Length: 301
Length: 217
Ligand SMILES: Nc1ncnc2c1ncn2[C@@H]1O[C@H](COP(=O)(O)OP(=O)(O)O)[C@@H](O)[C@H]1O
Ligand SMILES: [Mg+2]
Image 1 (cartoon, rainbow over the protein chains, first blue to last red):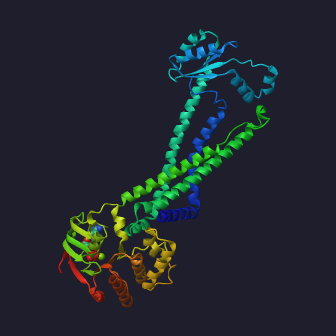
Image 2 (cartoon, chains in turn brown, purple; image 1 turned 180 degrees about the vertical axis):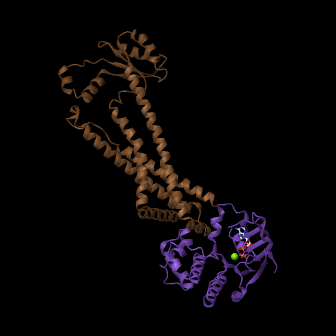
Image 3 (cartoon, rainbow over the protein chains, first blue to last red; image 1 turned 120 degrees about the horizontal axis):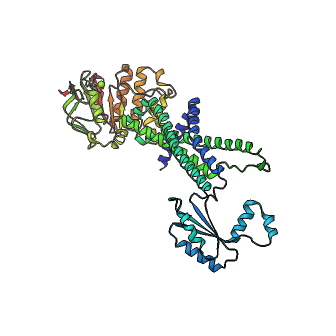
C-alpha cells in the first residue's frame, strides 16, 4: 500500500512537472479544453437563467383546478379523490390556499398588500400533471373535472405555454447533446495529446518495459497528466462561465426593470462547478488511459 | 536454474535464428554463449527474457516456462533479471543516476534506498561521482558500465549480459569480470553472450557454442 502510494506520488510529480515545463503547448491544450467545455456550459446557463419561471413552468402539461372559496374540506378531498381515478392524470398535487398565499408574499414581494387584505383571497387548488404525450389528454379531462361539485374553474395550459415548453425541452435536449459531443471532444483532445507524448517517450517506454515495467506503471504518469489537464480545463471553463455571467449581468442591470439591483442571473453553483471539474478530470483521465492502452497494445513485448 | 529444451526460433521470413538448441545452467553458475556474429546469441538471451517467444521448444527460468508466460507475467519475470544490452539502451534525456535507478523505481523502492543502491552500483563499475552526467557525455565504454550498473542495481537472481565487455578497455573488462564473479559467488546465475570467451575464463564458465543457430559444442 505504501509502495502503491509512492508509485502514484512519483507518477503525479512526473505529470505535474511535464505539464509545468510544457509551457505554451500545455497552455494551448488546456485552452482548447476550456473552449470545448465552455460551449455547453454557456447553453446550460442560458437555459437556467432564461427561465426564471422554470420552477413554475413544469416540463409536463398541467391542469389546474381552482376550488370555490367556500368549498368545505370534505368537498376538496372528494375532488382530489376523483382526480386520482382519472386516466391521463399522472400526478395529483394539492396546494392549500395558505401555501399559495405564502408563496405570493415571498415571490412577488407583495407582503404589504397581502397583510392589508386581512384575509386570504386565494382558493385551494389541485394541480394535475399529465403524461407528456399525447399533449391533449388533459383537454379531455377538463369538462369532467369542471362538473365536479365545489369546483370553481379548470385551467389547462395555453398554447403559448405549450410552445414555450416545447422550446425549453428542445433546448434541454440540445444542451445535453452538445454536452455529450464536447465531452467526447475533451476525451479526443487528451487522447491526441497523450498519444503524441507516448510517441515522444517511446524509447523510455520500451526500455522501462524491458526492465520489467507493468502496463499500469507506464500508464500512471500519463493518466495523471490527462487528469490534471482536465482539472485545469474544468476550472478554466468555470472561471470563463463566471466571467461571462458577470458581463451579461452588468449589461442587463441597465434595463429599467432591474435597476433596483442585479438581474438575478446566476452563475454556476459551487456544487455544479465542482461536478464540472470532476467530470472534466474524469474525461481527461479516460482519454489518457485509452491513448496509452492503444500504444501499449500496438507495441507488444 | 535456466534450461532450454529443443528450442527453435524462426523469423517470419522463414530463416531460423536458433534450431533445436538445448542447454542448462544451474543456479549460481555461469554460462558463456559464444559464436560468430549472427550465430543467434542475442536471440537466445531474448528468449530467456521473454522479449521474444520461441517457435517451438521450452525455455525454463526457475521452472517457469517463460515462452508461454501470459502477458501479465512478463514484467514480473523481468524484474528478477538483470539485462545488459549490446546497444546499452540508456535513456539519453536522463542522468546516469536516473538511468541506473530505473529498475528500483519500477519496483517502487524508497528514495533513500534508491540513492544508496545506485551509488553502490556505480561505485562497482567505477563511475561514482558521475551520477549527474548525461549519457551522451560518456564514452562508449562508460555507457556500457552504466548499463551494467543498471542491470545489477536491484540484485537480480539472473543476469543476462549481451557482449558486456564489447566496448571496454582490457582494464575495465577485467573489473567487470571481477564484478560478475562476485555476483556469481552470491548465487546469481549468469548467462553471457560473447564472441571473445577468453576474457571470461576467470569465471570458470561452462559454454555453449552456436553456429548459424545450431549448438555445435
Ligand atoms: N528481428 C529480427 N527479424 C529477422 N531476423 C532477425 C531479427 N533479429 C535477428 N535476426 C537474424 O537472426 C540471426 C541471429 O541474430 P542474433 O541473435 O542477433 O545473432 P548474434 O547476437 O549471435 O550476432 C541473424 O541471422 C539475424 O540476421
Ligand atoms: Mg548479438
